[in-house]
Length: 393
Image 1: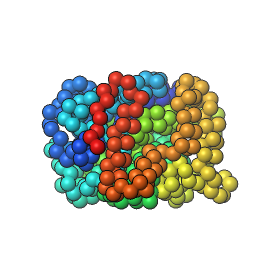
Image 2 (image 1 turned 180 degrees about the vertical axis):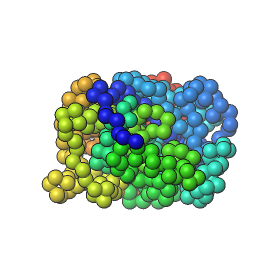
Image 3 (image 1 turned 135 degrees about the vertical axis):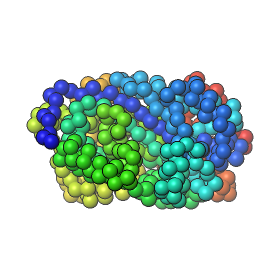
C-alpha cells in the first residue's frame, strides 16, 4: 500500500480535554473506596456523555466537548469540575485534581465492575490494581492521517516540557517520594507505556498495532498507553504525559501550549522544514528530569549540549509558538506557563504545605490531611458557582 500525499489544508486543531479526579471523604480525607453508586448515576445524568467511571471506584473521569477556542475549553472544564464537586458534596465527598493521593493505600481500593475493567484486572493483575493515579489527556484534531503521523513523530521532544508544568504527584502512600511526578513511575509498570515509537507512515503504524491485535494480545489501539498516541476513536493526537493539574488555569495553559506546538510543527512542514530528530534515549532523559524536578529544575538543551533552567527553555518555546498563540487567540493562556514555572506546580505547593505543617509540630498523617484540604479547595478555586463546603478540623 502506497502512502497518500498529505493534504495542504490546515487542520482544524480543535481541542478536547479529559481529566481524572480522585474522590475523597471530607471527614477522613482518605479516598472513598466504595462511593455510593447513586453518585455516579447522578453525575452521568447531570453531565451526559461528559463523565465516566474509571478503573478504580474512587476515580471519576470528565471530558469536554470538542472546542475551537481555549476560552470555551476552560468554561467547559470549570463547569465539569464544579458539577462534580456539587454532586459529591451531597455525599460528604469531594474531588481532588491530583495525580496521587498523599496517603491512601492502593490495596484498599476497589475496581469498577465493568467488562473492560474486569478484563484489565484479569489480564494485568496486581500491576493495574496499583494504578491509583490520575492524569490529564489533551486531544488536538489533525484530520489528515498522514500528517497526523508526521506530527506524532516530532511532538515527543516537547512532552517533557509539558510534563514539567503539570506535576502533582509528589506523595505515594504517605511518603515523600522525592519526585514531583511519581505517577509516571507507577504507570511505567503497565505494558505499552512511555514515550512512543516513531513510524515512517500511517500504514506502518497500523501494521504495528495489528500485530498485537491479530495475536490476541490487545483488542485495539486503546490498549496502547503511550505518552502521546493517535487516538483510536477520534482524528486527533492525544497527549497523555501530563499529571492532572490542581489549578484549572494550569491545565488550560498546558493544553494551549500543546495545541500551539502542534500548529507550529505544521507550519514548519508547510515551509518544507521539520523539527530536528533526537533519539528516544535523549528525550527520555529530559522526561526523567521533568518527573524528578518539575518546572523548578533544569533540563537538557540538546543544541547547547548542557542543562539549563526550565524557565529558559519555556521562553524559547513561547517564542517558537508566538504566531500560533496569536492565531488561536490564546496568548494569555500560554503565557500563564511563566507563572507556573516561577511559582511552582501543584507538587511544589503540596510539599510546601506538608513541610510547614510538620515544622509547626503536626504529626505526619495530620500534615498530609492538611494537604488534602488544600487540594479540595484548589481543585475548584476560581469556579464561582461551586458552593463552599467547609471541611471539619
